Image (cartoon, rainbow, N blue to C red; front, side, top):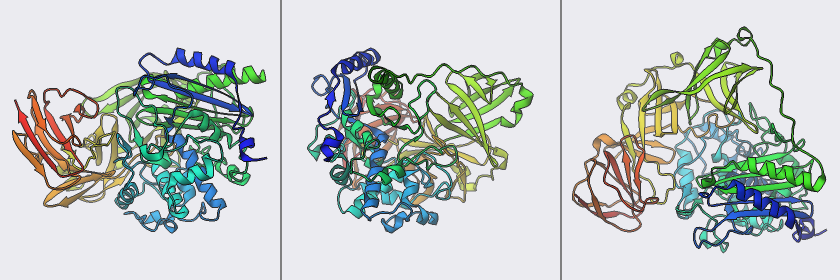
Length: 638
């Protein structure tokens, strides 16, 4: 049977159920949301629906319009790697440096990282290269050079293979290995060997020059481009995404069955045991739905998109969804409900579970609550757990406001603590204790217990840097998520430093010497110890900089106040950064390629030219002029 026949490129569209999906989507997507698209393929039939309009021309979105699928892209990356394994050009357990000799790190353990570790999130790499990964323009041309530079300045959070914690960096390395050994662009390889044979012709990246229709993007926002293609940059219509998922039901010779089995074999470690290669779970579990043993699930999310790919062997379907983030919906909730209705309609079977019985209360003397008290950390949040009777309370730490109530009186039931967001659980592994939250479909590691008394004291120079604010000086004008700055805080008088990059991103580290920091977290799972880069200080042209995750930051103490007149920079890719005081009207004469941002003293964004049309009066804080070419700007303050 030929591939086209095997994949059923001429599959029969189920119009009646597609209309049912359309009505359901219409009910769910709010008037403020831009668009949503969903597709289900089962056997030789399919159903698809879409709602919304294209913000570029206000035309209705169709099922053939392309959406970003974010981290669902990791499944495509795993397919590409395994295809090259079949071709004898890659091996899963060979160190990546064998394929990428330019790959170096400050940490020599990097030489033992394998492609398998890259694909099952156990590489120990920091997490994500922040600079130029998600952008408002296509910035791929020197992407690999920048990643090599980023890796050369990074250290590992753990021995490679020690545990799995969500890691985009591993998939960037895998993408680069695919390009290196195939001798061609990564996306070209994907299209020739995977998606075109599968009939998924809309699959590509965000490159406007690739000849494909540009993706739907959120209204009132510039288009989003993800240059980290292997970890999150695939753009496709959802029928074609479901086609790729269908390869895990019938590979049709595109990949060998052995390769498919390898991808869907549980390969995660320590609280992530059900991860496959690229898949979040190869044993999808949901409290309300049962899609059978070995169901596959992959979630994805960027600034503008939220996506999910779900494959059920038991019921023989592949389903994919992508929605714009302004819908404020969970794509998995929608997808599970539509898949349940699809099975009920086509197979006269139900996948809905009976509501679980409430577990019996466990007396507090049986659960030893006292030992669970303390501070728990990830890069996205800091919590403090306290106990009382047969319940726990959780506070969350904010730099400006300190400890704030987060969860009040989560009651002890069974081996967990029930709260509005799910069930809190504690998991002890050796000397480590982790705080988990179990929702309907996922278990996330939201904190690792940290004993502040055991942390060595700060080194002197880091002590002098605490309380200071640093501003990014190498931000690209196209960065969708601008770095802005860092505020360094000594946490509660301990030897722990907090690098606050935004209200919701704080990296906890220890100091190793006067200029370097080290990892303290080694939490598995997601978010676990995801996205933790250890910053370090360096000196260039007589001034100190802090480097973190691709960005360089300058001490705000040396910044001048913005004045009337001409300001220039003769160096490319160098931002001009100044202090400003509130209440001034600005008039700026500059190139249209220069981006202007104003930040409040707490680093929250006061104005960003990329997203705001009208410039407000200045705030107390900072102004950043970001450009690629040397800058020549005229400023008038009134």
